[in-house]
Amino acid sequence: MHSAARQLFPKVFIQSCIVHKMRNVIGKTRRKYKANIGENLSAVFSQETKEDTVREAKNFCKRTGTW
Image 1 (cartoon, rainbow, N blue to C red):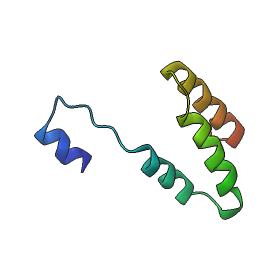
Image 2: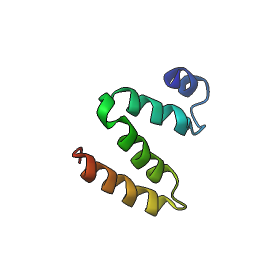
Image 3: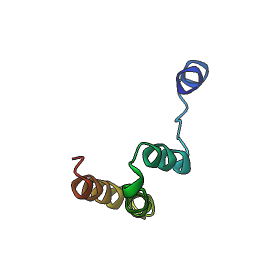
């Protein structure tokens, strides 16, 4: 869908829904880690500024061993 939208509207910024991004990540997570990952993702997406969000995302990756 993103590629089709880019072809039709090449200058428009496309943003995915945060809920769907979180669901995609949680859907790929083992059951025993889902609650913890969900809480940590919420912390990432609830930041006020881009800088805070990037910092929290890096912390999330370090805590979960994905960085």
